[in-house]
Image (cartoon, rainbow, N blue to C red; front, side):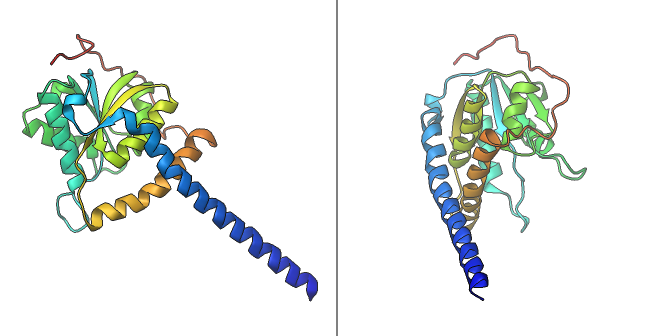
Length: 226
């Protein structure tokens, strides 16, 4: 009877210890990634150094209720502004196309063409299934050593964290974030995403699901001019 009690007590101690470790890891992961990516992130377009390529990180165009996803809308608007103000010459559209009826890069391309950006100024990455895949494939598949990332502030920080691990020269244009319930849902998931990034990069050394042949993005001018 006493042995059984001691076993239960040890199990409880282990569970509590693991929970405390998890909470501590969460508490460290979020501010750490935020701090490391801060200097390479800006919402001021005048602070963006002109680069040849801008990487637009994909997300769904529509929410489950059928409304336009503001996260998507602001990223597209940011990409349009960077291109039209000469901060990038070319856009790499990276997103999920794992299902035949779901194509984030193509959707982005259609909206950017409608805004006056030529298709020749875009490359589509259909295997950007998550942030790590998009960043690493930009280097391994599209042969980019430097580029400007386009997404929201919180996402910028994690993307920069991944890019720095691969010794890439990146900056991030932090576009607007929506407020309200949608934003809080995304931020709550960001805690898990940041913890997973640390595990992926430094423990499991996770690689993109798809790599494939190299498809270098080649531009005549290496850097755009203002």
